[in-house]
Every structure is written in C-alpha cells, then in structure tokens.
Image (cartoon, rainbow, N blue to C red):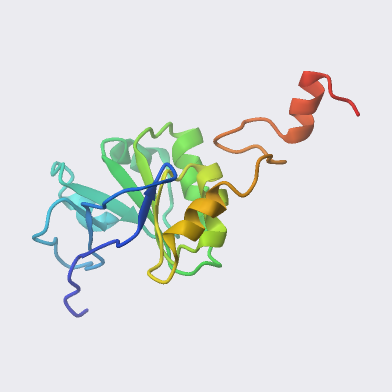
Length: 172
C-alpha cells in the first residue's frame, strides 16, 4: 500500500458546534504516523495501546464484542469509518458503544459523511462529525436541528414517541 500521509479533517462539528480538529487521521495500515495526536487504524492502535496520543478508527465491519469494547474504553476518542454513505453499519457500532458498553468518550464519524446523515448519527451516539470535503458547515449545522421530534428511541431519547405520549397522558 502506498504511503498515505495523515490528514486533518477540514470540517469538524463537535456536539453541533464547529471545532478545530487537532487530530490527524491516518489511513496507513502499515505504520504509525509521526504526527500526534493521530487517529489510526484499529490494528495499529491495539499494538500501541499505551500511547495516549493515538485513537483508533474502526472499519464498518468491526466485530464489536466485550473484549474489544473493554480495550476501547481507554481510548480518548473512537472514530468510525463510513466507507460509503450507504453503509449503515457504523450507526450500529456507535449505538453499541454507547448503550451496551457504556463508552463515554468522543465517537467521531469519518469517511463518506454527508449532511443528510448527521441528525441520525447524533441520535446513535456520534458527538463529533468529520464531514466529507464537499459538505458545507452551515448546511451541516442546519441539518442537526432539522427535526424537533423523533418517533424512534435513540441514544438521546430512550422512549419512542408513542411511549412518551402515553406516559404524559396525551391520548389524542
């Protein structure tokens, strides 16, 4: 594989607000980058787990079990890669990290991240969103606030809309 220089996401939203991204993203699967702090492939991070200036990125096909989740608990952040916007497996990984394994750190979406996906990503547990280069920050912020009510439960709201209405006594 050719040497791939680490890159820094040009546009990052963290909890809905623009933030300067100080973490380089390396997609090189053979060697750790010199730049720190850096987000690196999971296998490289596991080899250098004690380095607090490194964080893992998970491919969308990662088999997340209790053993891996225990190792990931020490990561300052976890990036989840979306190789294509049509690949929804990253949503499941984020939700499992938050709900099943109680991960409290930053979960960042990387890769083919489009404005249309952001609201749903935030409902699944992503709190940092590295947009694809052709996506506009202003559109992304607008998309995060596009919906005021959610029908389904999520990481942010654990009840479905019909359950909330029943609990609140709104039967109309």
